[in-house]
Length: 339
View 1 (cartoon, rainbow, N blue to C red):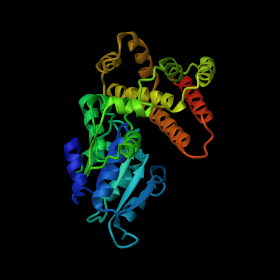
View 2: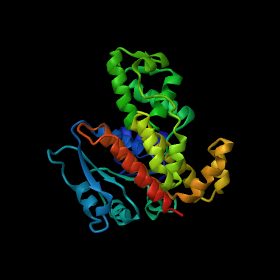
View 3: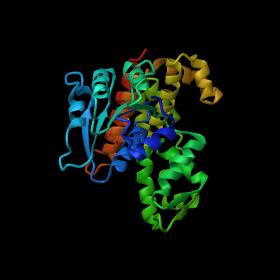
View 4: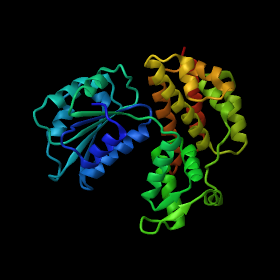
């Protein structure tokens, strides 16, 4: 069945035995991963997580069912997380839901699934499955998400601070959580000693929370202007600016593209879908061209590539900003091939 967010949260928090398959789709992979982790917490700190790659299911569709019927290593609860699924996982889902009894729940994450997906349509029709579309929240929903994450660490962000955190992380819940953890540590905040988080605190800490205006590079990358990107990146590197905010800016626009593209794939005219995103009138023509150029699987692949690059940049002993330059150049080349 297709779930609302309230229905989903209630089912996850209860680890409802009536739901044996959760299918998360849409471009917000971080949000999907957060929902999956919520189920894991509901099952208990000792619950065993079994990770399965979606691309292995075509050759072995019964593996997930085998895992869902198996006893945990130490006899406790377990749950199965299947990442990057496509319609190749349809037979797996059919086997899982046809079984008379299954011990452990399964979560599938398919960021590239369209509304016409056979897997998605099958899951929507099953009472023992729950589907949910994951998109980056905006407006009041974004404020609530940030406030909820902050509350878990003893912080009470002002509306302005919540919006700055949201913009800096491009809506990535995992990035927001890491930023909040650092801020809570600095402010000595915890659930039993809450602290207010405002703009002055963010400014004092020098966090990368501004609205970085890097639109020219972003447009160069997403429009596939291969002949210009080397010059743009060289100028950016020479400015001494950090690469991570630039990566986040590109991902943020890709997220907007993903949401708009989903509406177009559902039958909405491109111009109407762009206007619905409240894009500035000077940017409408360019946005329309991008939506026409980029397709959902290409958007999902680009977001994944840039997020992996950001994680590599933050890891100790990495190769530095050259990783970002390579990833952005590669994204530009791939965009140039999209028609």
